[in-house]
Length: 79
Image 1 (cartoon, one colour):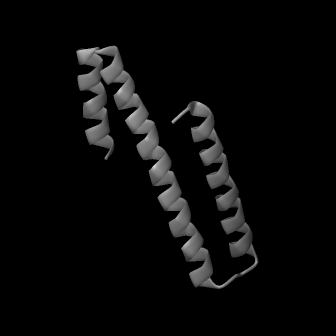
Image 2 (spheres, helix red, strand yellow; image 1 turned 60 degrees about the horizontal axis):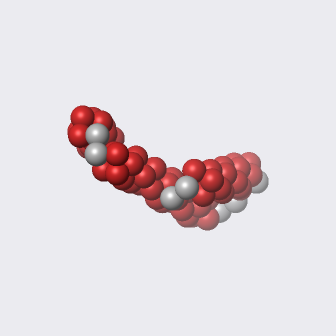
């Protein structure tokens, strides 16, 4: 995924979070707010996965085995 697409997705998440804040401030139904929180968590997880996948793929393409090993270790530590 390109950096532009990742940025677009992150900005969408930002908008969702701003919406959650507004819902909370307006004392909206708790279940409705929680549904949005769950959606944001899923969206962030998906973006994070794409970012990690892109990093791993760039290491594979460059055939830099030391960097690949370092990146894989980071991936396992994060996830």
